[in-house]
Image (cartoon, rainbow, N blue to C red; front, side, top):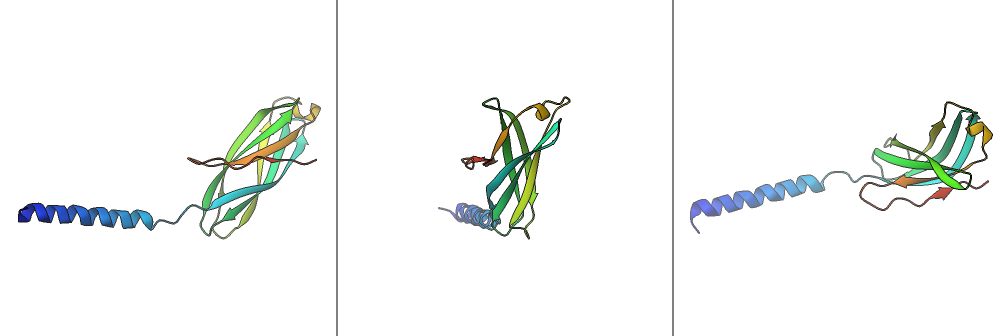
Length: 131
């Protein structure tokens, strides 16, 4: 191996090593769990699903929650929303709205369930409302 090839190889190895160190030094995303899911009728056009998101980890993180309403034996009303949980909080109460232009929700009996959506991983377990 000549000197130029050796120096090029060493330069590539050092660049890769430095890049690896930069990637491994980023703070890991916090983990989230969901509990205490409840549904509320705000008015005849609006229902809310409320829950408590708990964060494990000391950094700010985004959590996506999917909530569904069970109406007429089917979970066919869905709301998905992403919430920011600041570093200084370990838990946060969240609310996902369901709205319509008619009095539909006021005429229905419903219960809710929700789960944490995890990008590239298995989603969290469904947390069902207990009435």
